[in-house]
Length: 181
Length: 432
Image (cartoon, rainbow over all chains, first blue to last red; front, side):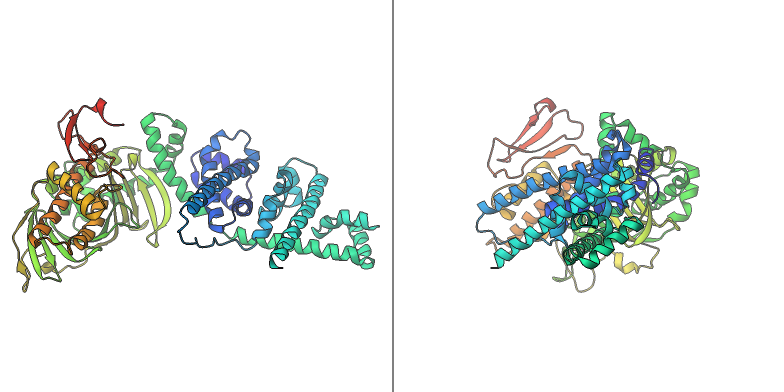
C-alpha cells in the first residue's frame, strides 16, 4: 500500500491488472466524496465512481505523467458525473411528460451530503487539497509533494478552503431555516 | 498576538501543524479571546466532520466491484480487438499472465466438463495421453447441476440429474413439469405431475444434432486449450459463495471456475454462437435411484399421444412469431427472440391460451408450434448466423424485415418480414 501511484500504474500496464486494486483502495473515498456532492444519491455516486475507475484503468496507457494520476482521475470523475447528470435530467424530463407516473422513490443520500456538496462546489485547487487531506489520508507534507507546491501554500489553501466550506455550509443552513419558517 | 494573526493560523493550529512557539502563542490568545475561541471551536467541528466523512467513505468497498468490471470489460474488448487486429497492447497484458502453473489444472478442470459430455453422448477420444488424464474423472457415474440459458438473474433454471445417457430435468418456471431425456433413443418422457399425464416426445433430428454439436464444441475448445498458451487465468474469486480459481479459453467461448484444491468445477459459462449458457451447483457421484430416470410411464399416469419434435421448420418458427405477436403481445413482435426468451414465455403462453374460446386440441397445437419455433431457432443460435430486428414492429408490416438467417449450405439469406412473408436475399442486399 505504500508504493507510489507510478509503481502500480506500471504494474498494471505490465500485465498485472490485479494491482489496480491498490489504486482503487487509495482513491475510492476521494472519488466518492467528489461525486456524492455532485450527484446527490449515494448509489449513483458509487456507480459513477466505479465507472470512473474502470475508465481510468482502460485509458491508463494514455496517461503521460503517471505521477499526476490523482488529478487525472478526478477529471475522469467529473466527466462521468456530468454524463450522469445529463442522463438524470433527461429522465426527469421524461418523467414530467408522463405526468401520471407515480412519484419516484427518494434517492438515499449519503450520510453527510451537505458537506460533500459543499466540497464539490469548491474551486479545483481547494477541492483537491481537501480531498487528498481527508479522503485520501494524506498529510500536508505529502500533499505538498504530490501537488508540487510549498508546504506554506498547502496550509494557506487549506485555510481558505475551510473558510469557503464554512460559508457554503452556513448558507445551506440558512436556506433550510428559511424553508422551515 | 492579535485576532487577525490568530485567525490566520487557526486552521493550521487545528490541524496540529504549528511549531511549538506559534502553537503556544495561539493557545495564549484563545485563553483571552472568546471570539477566537468560538471560531476555533467551529473549525474543529468542521475538521472532525471532514475526518468522520472521510472515514465513512473509506469503508466503501469498490475494489472487487471495479476489478470484476475490468475483467468483464477486458474480455469484451479483447474480442473486439481480436477481430480488428488492433489493441496489441491489451493482448500483451493478458498473454504475460503467469499461466503455466495453472494451465495443467485447467486441462483437468475442463476434462471434468468433457466427462459430463462423455456421459451425455457418444464421442471417441483420439488422443491417448489425454484419455489417460481424463480417465479417473470419466468414472463419475452421476452429475447433478443447474443449467441457465441467458441472463442468470431472470432466466428460468433447469435442474439436471445426469445418469449415463439419461437426464432428468425440472425447470423453475414450469413447476409441475418433469422431463426425462434419453439421448440414446432420442426421446423425452414429459410428465405433468399435477394432471398426472405422460407424453413421449420424439427428438431425433435437431436436438440430437445439437447435442453432437455441443460435444464437438467442447472438444474443440479442449484441444485448443491443451496445446495453446491461450488459457487466460482469471485469478481467484468468490464464486457461488466459495473460493474458486477461474480460466477462460480463447475468445471467451468457455469460462470455468473450479475449486482451487480439488479442481472440481463450480461454475461453467459457455458461449455457443449467440447462446449463453451457465452450468453451476455441480454435484458428482451422488447416488441416484434408477427410477428417477426411467423412461417408463409411472403408475397412475395417463399416457397421451406421442408428440413429434423431430422436424422444426422455418414455417414453425414463423408460426411461433405469429403466436408471440398475437397471443402474448398486443400485435407487435417481441423485443428479442432466443431460447432464453422463449423459455420465459412458455408458461405465459399457457396462461394466455387458457381463457380463450378454443378447442383444447387447438391450444395444444399452438403450444407445440411455439416450442418447435424455439427448436428451429436453436439450430441457428449455436451457429450465430441469424439476426432479429423485430422489436416494436407491428404484425402485418410488410416493409420491415424482422428476422434473417443463413440456412446451412445456402448462399442467400432467408428474410422474414413483418407480415411474415419470406424472401431470399443475397448477403449484400441484407437490411442494415
